[in-house]
Image 1 (cartoon, rainbow, N blue to C red):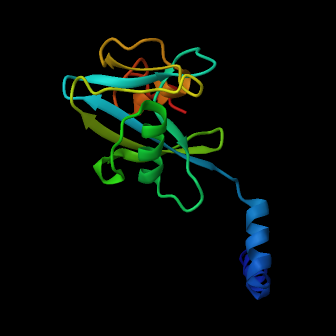
Image 2: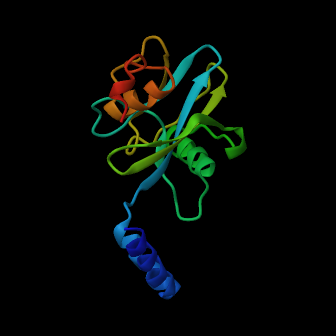
Length: 165
């Protein structure tokens, strides 16, 4: 087997670079990458959004634009969805920072703290409502939000690591 593997790589590396990249892109799994922001107030409330189809509350999140850094995406999406403007440098990377889901997407997770009474503003189309909820009394969450918060010891899945995606 070692000889076959060696022959494969010798042939592969003789190919032009653009052909090698195409082969790799065809054979490797593709992921969609986004950023999520967990915004808490200093009095332990969590910012949640109610979005279409409105079956549960979720966190501010969105897909990265080409060339955008994850923290920039997180700050942009937070502003677009809640009206809260923070600089990318104000966001603290989560630990873990990247959550790889079975369904083929990656969430880069960031945390931010804002003062109690921080105002929100939504457009009524992409987001119906943005509100702060006590961490120990969260409203019904979407399953992905429950799973993601579980990684950080919050929400209904906090005590059940086997439910994480």
